[in-house]
Image (cartoon, rainbow, N blue to C red; front, side):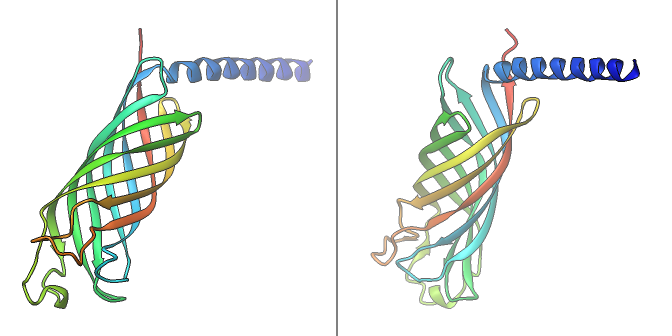
Length: 204
């Protein structure tokens, strides 16, 4: 008798959980906005200047707007993006930028792809007074514009929270210095990112 009762209770709980999960998954896709946290690790350098790439770390707050009844989103956010120009195998010029991306995103179930423009403003440097700039011919550019592309996987973690991991690449369309030097092609970075998004589910 106890075994039958236990089986009945367990079966009922599993049925309720399955029904709730299906209902929630359906509701969780009915959202207009999302906001999250994103952490990035990149290899970065201006390859026309030196062959030395540096590992740098960045973070940001992504936001997105989903078009109704579609798999397309417009994404933006506010980021602190770190880039680098290698001097040698041990030393690099570190550049920290406030970055504003404007991306288009399309979802394919668990897989997604985003791409678009970004706008950087240089707020901090390290090792700027290095031998690479000792002649004072060029100054680092404060404003930069570039392109970025990301391909990732995103899955539901709990309730309206979604975790993701992505491969990313970004390149400046503007040179690293002013006046424009033909030796600089702009900084190129590639790496991975992980994070979490919170979806604001529609209630109507």
